[in-house]
Image (cartoon, rainbow, N blue to C red):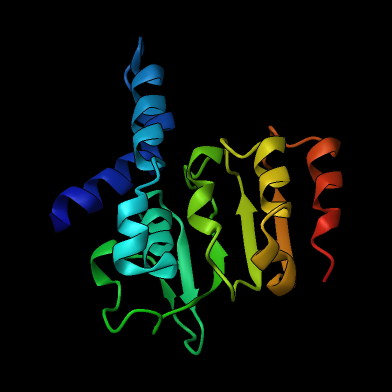
Length: 165
């Protein structure tokens, strides 16, 4: 499993540079959509922070837990412990494949203070609108960084006004 997850992550980061010509774009879009599918049973079983961390790492992002300085980037290295022990404080989704479809994972997060979105090709206005409507994020967010996300327009940025902090 470790090799498979590591390989999948590596492939996701490099597929645009070395993908064979032809119909591979549809395959990668499908695979990324699968990685973003929300598993509501998993959220109930392990809690919102653990489930969101699993989703983010599966998509190539990193998370930092409250009370820790180190960024977690290895899916297989996620800490274990009692439900609610590890709470996501920061998300670095640089060059990840997160998309609107998976944003339901963020609904239960109460301690996220920082989100970085850099070169996220699947982030679009609808994603930012969705983020701005998550009440718990409205209360905790302090910093958001959006850089080189080509599908984000002024409409998406304007939608962030709900994040009042």
